[in-house]
Length: 376
Image (cartoon, rainbow, N blue to C red; front, side, top):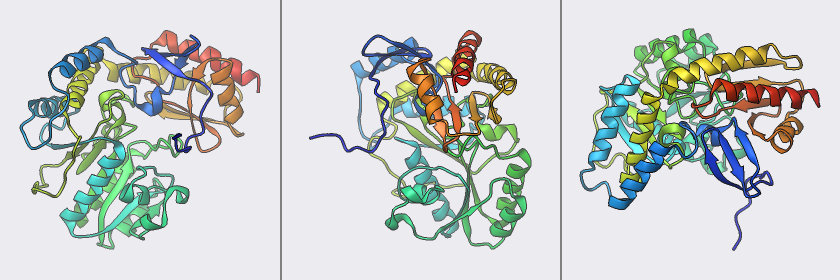
């Protein structure tokens, strides 16, 4: 049997990681400015996380959600305090797509409606309802194209007000910062209007913070820059720094009902122990503040470079837009400068490093990036 070939792979076998660096099977070191799609929040193989995984694995890896799991309760309480949503409820699953899937389902149950508003260039996942709310027809199979989603331009207040006031919308789902869409940021005014219009029409406001959450933008959630509170927040990626986990933070106005939502592996003992350790590191090492400080430095430095069309970002979620396709530039960065970055669309380099990135590592990246840029 061979693997189902769905990923275009770089010819590199990564076998080890420490902090913001990874190493391939030949011993080559790479500076990681991508964190495996924003997943590695507290750095590769952080000793606090490794210790928590080892200790929990020796006690109990898994039991089903048919019994009490004190680690779930502990994690929910810690997360609520750290992120400022201690009055919300938490449903734990395994991934970001599942988080959005359950958020949309819960909104539909709550409102009795089925229409969803999403935004151009949105990415919310590859499963049924999540992929229908993703603005990419190439990954939306016929079985998922049910006509339930209306896509609007991001930051178009008038268009959003018109659609929400039709009165048949179950939910508006918006990313705290569009990641796959090219680091496009909803304005504070736009988010505030969405909140007001959803309140006026009984529509559920879902903030997808899967990539932009967990401290990445210099606040725990990106929407907190706008001072709003959504009805539902979805999280994953950085929640357990690589262990598969996702979560749905749910407003107290929602009443749980047995059987509405469910999961086999979600919130298992090993996942929760890992996620608690991640919060320990985020708090003890002040990583939200670090993301704000180092991210602002990177953005300011990149804006001073020649040969770049535009730099966008918040904290350590940064898009570098070029006037040309970035495939060759990204290859130079990886194979010649030994720096991992991401990409968005065809013309944007995407930076999503671990939140532990230091000023010295930021300078190291800037030197290597400038060198690669000068070779174009």
